[in-house]
Amino acid sequence: MAFSPLVDQLLDALRVLPGVGPKTAQRMAMQVLERDREGGAQLARILARAVEEVGYCARCRTLTEQTFCELCESPRRDDQLLCIVESPADMLAIEEAGGYRGRYFVLHGHLSPLDGIGPDDLGLDDLDTLIKDAAIDEVILATNPTVEGEATAHYLAQQLKPRGIRLSRLAYGVPMGGELEYVDGGTLSRAFMGRQPFNE
Amino acid sequence: MAFSPLVDQLLDALRVLPGVGPKTAQRMAMQVLERDREGGAQLARILARAVEEVGYCARCRTLTEQTFCELCESPRRDDQLLCIVESPADMLAIEEAGGYRGRYFVLHGHLSPLDGIGPDDLGLDDLDTLIKDAAIDEVILATNPTVEGEATAHYLAQQLKPRGIRLSRLAYGVPMGGELEYVDGGTLSRAFMGRQPFNE
Ligand SMILES: [Zn+2]
Ligand SMILES: [Zn+2]
Image 1 (cartoon, protein in one colour):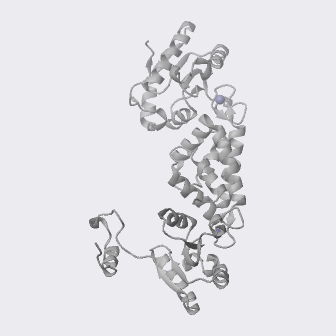
Image 2 (cartoon, rainbow over the protein chains, first blue to last red):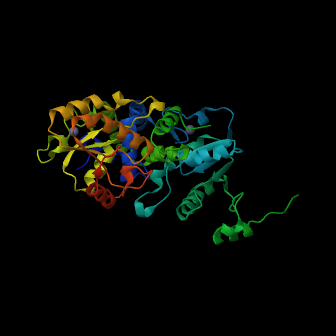
Image 3 (tube, rainbow over the protein chains, first blue to last red):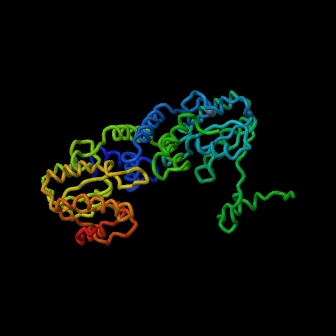
């Protein structure tokens, strides 16, 4: 015994969402069918439109349904600074942190030879065009501080160095508000090596 | 700064799902847009169909897109036993526990005067018809062991007693204040076996 065929199909389909197991899928289906059909219909409509219409910005490759994203359209950003990130979520996190006023480029992943993800899959041709066309002074390699992110940053650095563009990488260190005893050893020793003069 | 208008709408729409806050909605949207568009399109299609087509079984009122649910269509169930539950999820939990071979009736809620939920909202007219038409020997009041579920059971008992039908309630064995949907199968089937005559 299970639910009806269509409800069972809905339970299966919900499993595409991250962190959704059988019990959560059931709770979600019951919420939508028993308590909020209009909300469910709205989600179905928006989701269908989003997977159909959302593509990549023609300049920075972030997710957008427009040709250029709002950030690329803005005249108030510094064209001489380019920050390369792995994902649109990373781009949003940096924007929410505030302080950065340059442009972005989104790789949608990182180099991963074992998964067959090479330079072509990260839009590096588009990056080339972008860098050629704009008068970029500095590229910030803001890929994740993981093994794959590091490897990707190193690859990008090799490609960009011959162009005489200044390259930088986010500083490693202890996270603000964290407690030293809970910071992993690798991060701590990088924070020690990168220590800065103390200014009161 | 946020994502594009359509992606932001998707984040909002996902919040209809229970337990989904802003960060989870973002993870879900990124999963669907960055890694599994086909899964997202499939979810949108099934969800749209489900909220449109899934209705109530004409006999037991459980969720189904057919006129009668599979359980009501089955000739192998005992027509003399009727189990009244609050939700389709409760019905499924009892079926998965095993042991019960009768029919069901689903209230889709419980009496809740403060929320304006009265007998009419629980399909009690349909219940009346069902009980009149079938030769029912015993009704098991399997509403949740909560204050509202108890009150609903008492109300149902008052309505059904004059008809001379035997009434029972699940044995305590099910934890007070819990919801049937989350009770383990062993406890549920013990509670079924130990069901007691209903005393007001
Ligand atoms: Zn852009
Ligand atoms: Zn039915």
